Length: 423
RNA sequence: GGAGGGGUGGCCGAGUGGUUGAAGGCGACGGUCUUGAAAAUCGUUUCUCCCGUAGCCCGGGAGACGUGAGUUCGAAUCUCACCCCCUCCGCCA
Image (cartoon, rainbow, N blue to C red):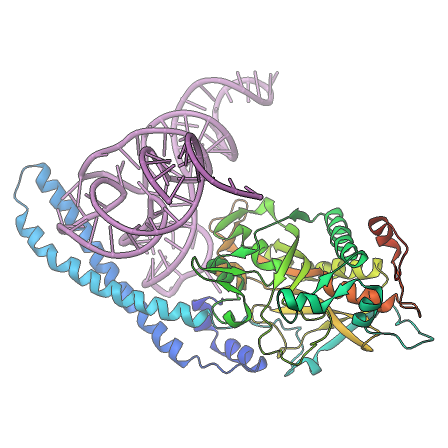
């Protein structure tokens, strides 16, 4: 969320941000409502002040056993007036917040301007796509040959876009979680294992609600949601907290399942593990001081890249352009891994700086040593990595002609085998 | 699911209608004292918003004692609803 005062005082910046994002949103109504607020607030506070002064006087008179009925009579109407003002202010406040909750973050100046993913900027590449002397298969074909992935039975259990990992496939999934968590914790990220069902405040805190309800799986009765990413659970760990400066930066890593409706992606990636309703992911989350957040984004991205490098998977880093940037992010690097089955780089990690956008929604602040007041922290997160897509990348990049898959060196201690082969 | 108890400042803990933003203690910070430290002692110790040509320091004001509503001239104190925590019983992974 943006700060109301910031929007009021920096209309041009906000308008440019919206235009760069290709967002259709008029600020006129907001400005109209917002400027009604403060005069009303001033009136209300003036009356409250009067009430406080007179009530004190009444108390004094009563203590002296004097008559105060005249003053009390006079005050009766004041209470009603205050109530009127406050009701109006409350309605205005609700409108302001509702509006602001639907305004996206302002892109950082370094974000390339562009309309959609075709205008994202490649920042760097690592590794070279392997040369195959046979036609590489898709992971779903290999999965079938090796009998390690079962989509058909998964659809019987749950439906489309679900999968069953079997045998060494399941073990690969588990090995990757452990490998990634071990690597991340060795770099100072604290491992946490949070709830994966959250309340609406958490979803508002990180920006999934109110705007993107149709992308979430909701549980009714008591209102709950399945998390689409560990970002939600982990960032909200510190919701409504004031951290002290010496606590920062805070680094967390978490494995969670993730749940996404994928409404509106009909026809996209209908086969395979790329786009599932339920998938596993290890996430990196940071809470940092504002002045460090862009450096922290670089190091967060490097930490995610390191996982791909250790797995020896070729990838590239892409800076998302303004039109492709997520709602809450000020800047995002996507890591795209090479998939021989598709002859394409595909997203496997997304690393973002949310600046104070989530912190303001979730009210996560910190206090500087020896300074008055508080500031919002900056929050960041990135996949480190999406497990399902890593499985895809490993199967496709490490495949042999007979369909067997070589296990990357770093995973062998976890897997207990060097090759995944049929039978 | 049934029965009780409780939510106050960084922490502990007073406070049941009128200078209580909140006693007292602890902690923290600063001063005095001391060669230094401890002890002793004095002082300071929250956040949000509004106004002041003043986004930091300063002055004034409003608000915040789990959350929200209500009663009242006036509420941390009374009423109602909700949330959370704890104890016991039952049930269950």
